Image (cartoon, rainbow, N blue to C red):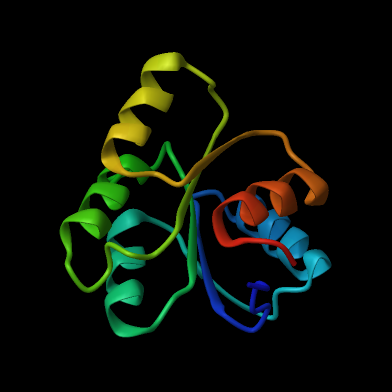
Length: 128
């Protein structure tokens, strides 16, 4: 099944520059409907209000971390099916394990490029 590049994608990061970078990478790959949230709680509001096909979230945010956002999404029957990719600057084994246990679909360590992002998305959603 081919990936629908028109699906809604939500990127979550408390660092505006990172939001811009990831949005540009997604646009390069071909995604056209990309929304942004600057923290986990605003992301949760957006996800509950709109139909998303993918969430890409940073790990380190305040007041709600990416892991907490993931746990909230997975705990909600209406949202738990949404593919979730975690982005982090650290590749600590315990973080990877915690994210896997919480139900993350994939994991990206910064810095990364469009090819890496596309590969991670393809692993989660299928080929483009």
